[in-house]
Image (cartoon, rainbow, N blue to C red; front, side, top):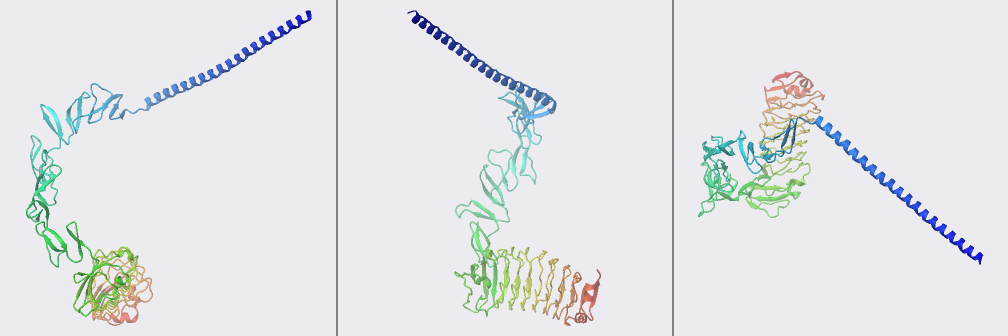
Length: 524
């Protein structure tokens, strides 16, 4: 019995001690957790304090250095800080009830004003504007009324700064004091209306008035009188409206105006039967074709005429297919007696006109003065074999790209004179046979042919039987060996200007051709 009691009491003691130990362990665990949390909170607090300290330091340095470096005058939002005082820009003011923010003067073009946020008074206008007063206060700053021949206004009332009348071509819109506006119709002398629209009442006396209709005599245009005829662009006019309603061949109507709509015009002689051998047609580049005023629906590779009379043919050509060459474009068109090109024939990308009119044996007149030749390099044999050619209108050849002039006028028997004063020939290297066979040519002036790199110079004046004046004073033959210019057929007792070194290089035939001629030598 005793042993059982002792066993029970011993077990109770053990359980109590175990319980006490567990309580102590919990307390120690909680204490550790608390200490850990406190360390974490202290660390966060320390970081926050460091950040606050860093911000304070930054603000301090910013204020310190910005105060040292701040300019005397600083403009912020139209507010001028001048010597640490707030001053507004011109046209702004400091309201009495808001002395930190500048406000724009309510009157346009006022440069000095004062007042509150809701109301201000102007005390000075921009010097370019006139101050208009009401009860001794500036009411507005207006453009001053200025009169005179060169001004819009004809007569001013300076007391009220008002234009009373405008000069020709201008009018005073309703409710406007001094702003003369231009009449909307060109060349109108007198008109009236408001700011957005006006009606013309009188045109310039040198022009004709066009009216809306016979019953409505409102002027709609002031233009030159519409004229019709073969020499004019217009074929049919509306005389009431003074407008063209139908254009002549070669022109099209656009915005009441006849504008150019053909590339070139050719005339075929009376014994010609067709336009055959026209390379342009063969290539299918003709957009439109008119024969004697009648449009050809389907231009073929060879158009045949119905009779043997002279025929006038207009061509509109698509030049986009010509990449860089017009060589042989009109070669051997026997029936053509004249051709004239317009600016619609675009040659701005063309580099070669070689043989372009070669063997057009019956052609008498060629006009290519509208050609754009800025990229042109080769005009060799351009008019070769045009034996009946008497008139040539050339373009301005003032470009540095032309290199080849060989045989350009060879066989032009009927040419009596050629104007080559526009030629610029710094890039030319070959002049062979340029005027070969021009048997009626009497004079030639090549003084502007300032050629430095001439490699070949032969036959240039062969068979020029009537030639009696030659100026080749600037031809440089330092790169050539022997020069053959003439073959014994020249006009008697002529005059020639040339360099001494060129004369020295002439072959015997050329020198003998100059016997009896007056020679003016230049040394270089």
